[in-house]
Image (cartoon, rainbow over all chains, first blue to last red; front, top):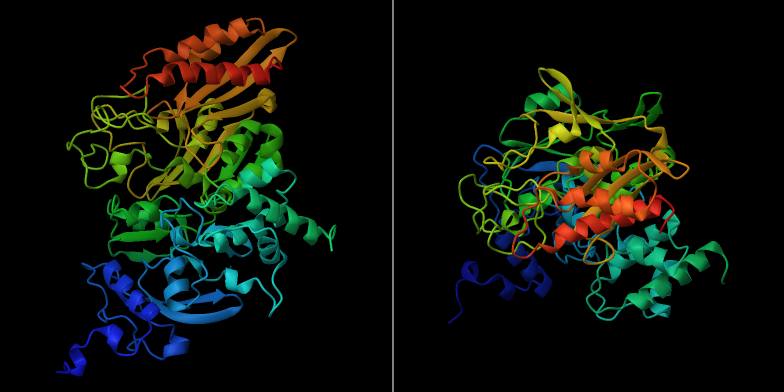
Length: 219
Length: 325
């Protein structure tokens, strides 16, 4: 017998697997995950099951913020606990930025704030306002890959690929900071990005290749 | 993470008024967001101090002033810091990762909490986190822990590299609260655990570090920071040494030595400094002086190697500075 519609598990209501996982993650984190206002309309239209504002013992409460991500500004309602990483992945659907350790130890969540590389897992979304946020999705120009993206493909700078967006965001900054003078300098300035597959030699090669191309030494 | 109210004050006095025992100040967030996720700290109010004007890095006849909100990366690369106090620049560049150095403030760096695994795990006792609950590190996993300044309550190391360099240079911190401001020597600012390991420094609720002052020391141009760790980068130290050397021909005129990774606070070594002063510039001098670094050391089961390691770290740093390495 068909269960009543309102008691069906969420993953049977036609939502995607990613949506289901998103909801599970939101529930397990105990956080209310509301959609960006611009996309989903009002605060009452939430994607997560946990629709009530969090119980806050007098503290807490939701905040309306505006984030400029890859050149687009969107307003959204967040609990102040929401990290930039979770906002990017769960609210902007920009899942290129990866959650590795979620404790500032692995670099998988690296993004740029005003052109500087930072860890989005240790950045509160509310504190990323008034800054230009760039994620891996914002690097390419149309169909044309950023030179660092192209170099990672050319040099096979990855195996499983999970750390790659963070590696690339870090590499772009490493090059613009001017820390590509030698292999050891690249390794030192890329040390905040761990690769459990151990693709380091090819990552160093990719950073070198991209740095040379961006200097115009190689065409 | 527990719920909290977020505040963004625009002035120091407003911020100080918001700082209560159940509040936490946030600048870069690299320590506090991590510890809030672990529920090691559970503030009901988080006060974002980034709108305050505690910035700027300037060199004057008195020495160096660093605004507490300056980032680790900007401070490490500042021309005046690089030129006048290489030990500060090196200590910063050997800390954390490029991403974290872009986020973390100088004031926050000095207030970062210990990396002791028991402190970070709320499922275990910890006198620093929960006074009176006990210290499992004393008989447990203590390879990374301190040998100097320990007590029967706590053996956790202070993790900041910058603080070691600043203590060696006799730096001070300017503190501001609603009731006024004061200047405190960084060496006095930090407290050893004794029976109250939850009290790590002199900071009172609502009090902020607004700036760091480093006295002028012309010969600090000859200074360095040597950090020994399990991996070459992006790791906390097993032992580190901040040293500065004033040399005249073959004679040591003066010196500064402090060590990290071995103490419950950044460990200044005035006795080592005295043992170097006026002596010939030679490996034997360095070795004899470095021996004094082990004075009062209480090694634990898994970190006894640090007694020897810290002395060798000091010797190697001095050899490098003295041009003997």
